[in-house]
Amino acid sequence: MFTGGWRKHYEPQSDVSGSWLVCTPENVREFSAIGYFFARDCQQELKAPVGIITESFGASTAEAWTSREALAADPN
Image 1: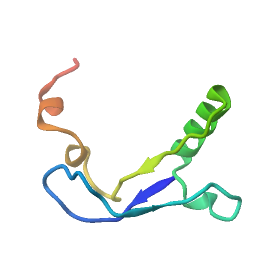
Image 2: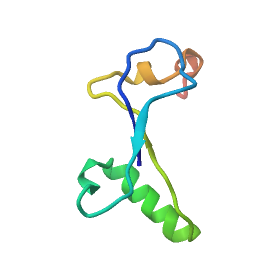
Image 3: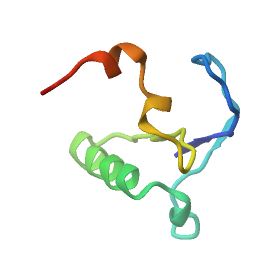
Image 4: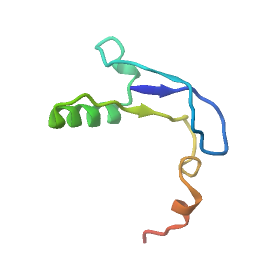
């Protein structure tokens, strides 16, 4: 799992800081549970290594992670 370093930006970034962790019993608690199970299932199905990326910030709104164009589309 790659965990990006936290930095506040208002525009998309092409370069981020962070670090990779290989999943072990000692550090699995640091992983996103949904990301872990998704990657595990993909790895078992594909028979290939799968990496997941975590770029999140607690208490942030969905609008902060979604483009204006996507927010303008009304699915209902």
